[in-house]
Every structure is written in C-alpha cells, then in structure tokens.
Figure 1 (cartoon, helix red, strand yellow):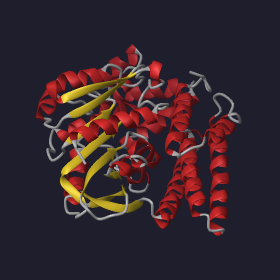
Figure 2 (spheres, helix red, strand yellow):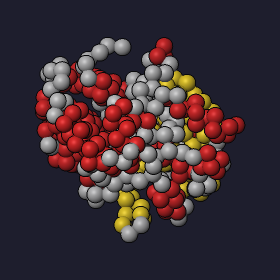
Figure 3 (cartoon, helix red, strand yellow):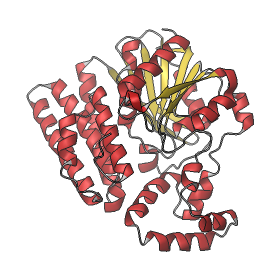
Figure 4 (tube, one colour):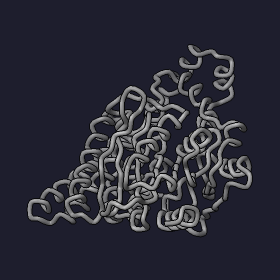
Length: 399
C-alpha cells in the first residue's frame, strides 16, 4: 500500500478518507491535492490544509444552493464535513479541536437540511433519554411510514458522524433498513457540547434508545440490529450481555479488552508504577517523557479527552474497566458477525478471541490484504466490507 505519511495515524486517516469516496463523503482528487500540501509530521499544516479544502467546499456549497442546485450543495456540504473531521484529528496539537469539530458538525447539519429538501432520503434529528439529560442522534430512512427493520450504528472512540454515514447510513436504507446513530458518552456532541465522558456499560445508552425506537410506528420492534465499529466492538457485546431485544449484531472488529492498546505501549518501568498504584510518580515520569515527543503528547490528549481525565495514571487505569468477562459473554443471546481484518493494529487477535468466547452464536469474517481490505475497520474496502456486513444482516434479519 502506498505510504503517504510516515506517521501511522496520519497514514490511516488518509486511507480512511480514500475509502469514504465509496459513499461520496470524499473525493479522491480533493484528498490527494490536500495531502500534497502537508509535510510529514506537521500537525499545524494538517489542520490548516484540511480546513482550507473544507472551507473551499463550503463556499462552493453555498454558491450551488444560491442558484438552486441542491444536490450539488448537499454533496459539497457532506465532503466539507468529512474534511473538517480530518482536520480535527490533529487539532489538539494546535489547540483548535473544539472549533474545528464544531465546523465539521455545522457542515454536516447543512448536508442534512439539503438532503431532506431533496427528499431521496429522510434524515431526522432525534434525542434519546439518558439519565438526567438526553443524547443527540440521527435517524436515516427512505420516505414512507411502514414499520421497518432498524440498524443501530455504534461509533468508536473518536469517529465522527461521517463514519456512521460511510459505515452504513449511505447504503443500508436502500436495502429497507432504518439506520440510527447516537452520540453516546464520550462521543461527538455528547463530549464536546455536554461534557459527558466515556463509560463501559453501554447498555445505559442502548436500552433507552431501543425503548425510544419501540415507540415509533415506523420501527418493527422485533427486527432491531446493532453494528459497533472500532471501540464499538467492545461496547456492543457489553451492552448485549444486558439488553436482549436485539435480533442480530455485528462488531468491526471484535474487542474483548480495550486496555491492551494503551498498556501495550508502556515501558516496563511505567507499567510497574501503574500496577503499584504510584499515581504521582507515574504522572511525573509520563510528563517528563512527553516533553521529548510533542506529537505523542497531542495524541494522548486526544485519546484522554473522552475519558474525562487529565491524569495519565487515571487514563490508563480507567481503560482497565473496558474488559468483557466470561459471564458477560455467556449472557449474549443474539447471533453476531465479528470481522477479523488482517493486520489489525489496535486489537490484534481479539476478534477470534471474542468468537471463541461466544461459541456457536458468532461468525468470524476475515478481511485480507489481498482483497485490499486489511487494517482496522477495513478503511480502503468500505464497499466490500459493507456488502458482507449487510448481506449477513439480510440473512439474519430478513426484510
């Protein structure tokens, strides 16, 4: 695979952007011309150039709308939102994350409004009861009021709403699905606007969402499925151990222990401090080490934000709560498809581990480099990935 950047995170972001061309959330020429202006390792240039591309598309979207070309306006706002989301991925290094994220969400809502005016797809803003507040979300369907099967998309730790669009909302409604995505604790607007951090017990989100969906006349209560991507590959099985009104589920990939991706990066002397509960010493040594790596400091800031902590010790220890137990695996009742991409870089081997823990109720679906479908969440094979996932769901939750 062509390496555009030396930094693995930047390289993955570009691959993901290229994959989103399949759902028309990006365009290849816009991506390639943007990254050509970004030197290796230059976070400020990353934010600046992706923002510049998004700004240009936003201006073109306004121009199209002013002359009555709503389809072009909608398409341009969608791509602008995707490029602002790309800019936000390194905006911690420039101290502009909140501002860039808001521009991504504003562009997305412009797309929603234009798409609704066109009428090929209905995108409804919803609010889901959550403890003493609500969580924002979106519902996607083709026009019509008949009861339909519904697919709930659970995002990962830092995926934008564009991820839900590219991951299923662009394609699934044509197969007769209603698609729902919600900003859960630590995600998107719930984090940025409401300050609600991550929590491992995702049934606190899934159960009230299903309660809400079952009140709707356009939802078939017996045909609700769930798709979890990235860290959603942990949240979905965790929730399904407690919530049993789901007909089928997909996780991409399977995750049984979120903490391994964090703890695996720690040198032994820091791991000993963590295991011994030496919080002050751990934080001091981490702070000293990060003075030598501003890029890693920015990455950690991004990863820590949704956990709602500022202490490095608290971040690593919080991750230990994100593990599936044998009892939780035994409590899951619905069939599950578990993707297993070759070269999975975050949780290698855990898809197979999840399938083994679930026994006969789970199916392992490999994705390979030979297919162009390797790496976490198959970024460059979103067509093939979507076909396999939706075909499996069609078989287990018939239209």
